[in-house]
Image (cartoon, rainbow, N blue to C red; front, side, top):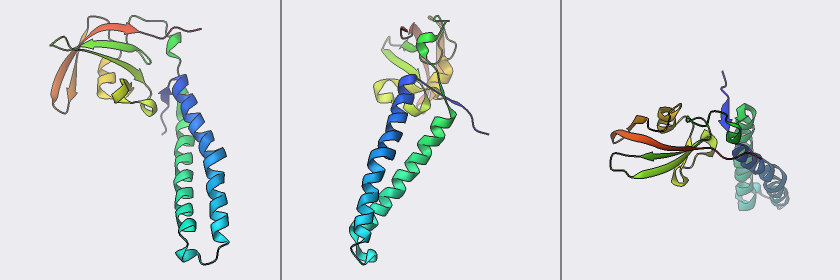
Length: 161
């Protein structure tokens, strides 16, 4: 059974743009190189042909993955969130640990997660622990280094048009 995957409008647009780039630009360019290389004779020792075929397979594999992800993606616009007092998909959450060290994260779709930029996937342990939390709630997250407590000190959502 396929499950739907929440994603922000920006995340879906980026995924679609990557698909379009691969399908309309990169794949035709590689097909042209393979076609040209195939006309140069012995394919078994033709580096351009061999590399081109490998590149084509990689592009087709990525296109297939992107297509599957887009089919099950459920675009959720965080700016339309009505209950802004609790943590839901798309929330930007300010957390403080026991030493009052603050961390700001945004809960996004798993396919657009980037922890180095504070974008945490919806199914990550930290995101799961924060779901439904309110300002002042203390949540414990089990990390590889052991349990860590975070207090929710702020919740924000993007403003819609």
